[in-house]
Image 1 (tube, one colour):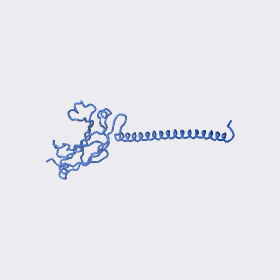
Image 2 (image 1 turned 60 degrees about the vertical axis):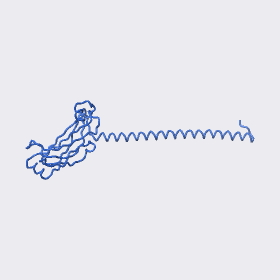
Image 3 (image 1 turned 90 degrees about the vertical axis):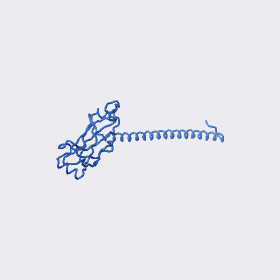
Image 4 (image 1 turned 180 degrees about the horizontal axis):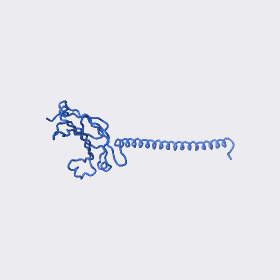
Length: 200
């Protein structure tokens, strides 16, 4: 029972004020808890979004090297051979061909291998394309075994392109030509022009 009169009314008012204060504090605590939960949810969502972006970037990087169950396909690229007029004339007069030779190599996991000790790199694949009438070599569909792929540390491996004559009619190479040497990330999907001329 609450007391009547002024003192009673005062106690009654103070009682409800205290009760309201408790409710107010509870509301503040609830809002704070909701705010913390919301902040944590936002942080978790941001972390998930970042992880998703990183995963997508990694996937796109890996997909630049096409893979299947048993092999890895090297990205395609093109090499155009541009000869001087006299070189082109002699090559055609002799019915000679042009060889565009690609060597793919990288730093091996096993740095104690004899090839790495001698050459400071490990050859994982080679591809030779012989040109007769055309002067553009299309490098595509070159596959590595999983063992070859896993034998190198850096997947952005090196590509070296040499150009020379096919020695159909002459035992000697007849031309000197530009070299191309770069990492696969800088070569894939592009065409490069290499210029050549007669050696003699």
